[in-house]
Image 1 (cartoon, rainbow, N blue to C red):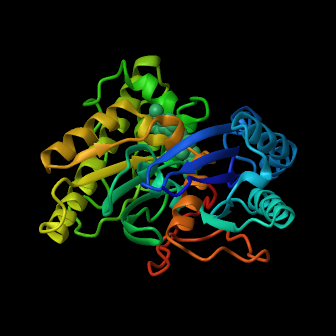
Image 2: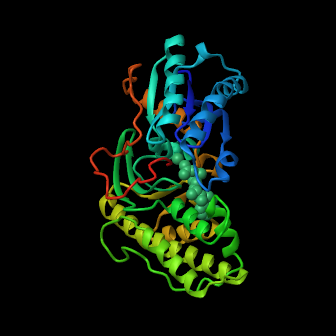
Image 3: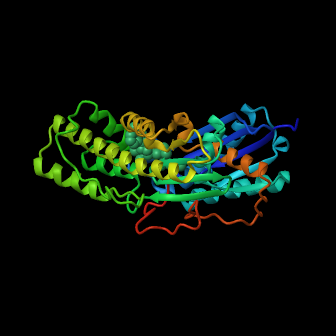
Length: 365
Ligand code: KG4
Ligand code: ZN
């Protein structure tokens, strides 16, 4: 049997600095041998969001040591790796340059192939590392920078079915938390408040509800939250809890409706070929228990199973980048030249045009 391929992965596209060693075995299964992540959350918390300059500096300071740690923990020397996979976009340009230059230097010094990976491809293929999922499947990516429904047909073969036309879902959580005076990141703070709130007290709008397109919109919801909060100000603790619970429920209803339509479309398109359809969920918002529970129910209602990789592989990490490189290597995709450029904007599906306002924050996936 062919030996396993050993890939070094590097991730620096937003506010996590990460390095990992992953194996891809001849039978297509994978093993994470090491996976180190430095989260810059504390560096940015005081500013209520990611500050690009601070992020880039932190990547410069942390990355070399993290790569050494990832190699050490995997008992691996650079000459032992078969390829180097590094995020080349989308993301913050400063961080991308740090990671890509480092990856190029290591590839040049060790004469190993370099794979310039699309960060979204890392998220899209993680379920094959964790659950050995066969193609095709649907991906719901809900993070601080992206809200997308993607048909994953094969390595390098993606079709975006829906995206946000304004804020990403995590961004909507973060901005709403800020206007309610809750800390950053807003998602966990809102989930915590919502646990003791009445989710029926406020009726909030569900933008794009009923439309056959599969896109999302969250800025109207954020505005409605601001107006509702202003109308009842000053807010006491139970007002905040009720606002958070109503907000979270509206998001869960919206996902139920939008995702439900996507599952129905998948079943129509793959009725004859896929027996056991799967929805993969990834991104930080997938950590929300109310949302996750509703997704389980939505999937069950459509005959799908929900695949949710463990939280540390749903959020940004380098194991997913190494794995995407391993999948590319196994699929005989050509390596990238050493002058490959970082791409701050890089849609997974090059045929889908950017929607108005989409990716405004442009950084995280
Ligand atoms: O995937 P992620 O860790 O980082 C990137 O965006 O790449 O996602 C972070 C986002 C933040 O906007 C955060 O507020 C949101 O995920 N988030 C949550 C929860 N935990 C994190 N949103 C809702 N509920 C949560 N429990
Ligand atoms: Zn991401």
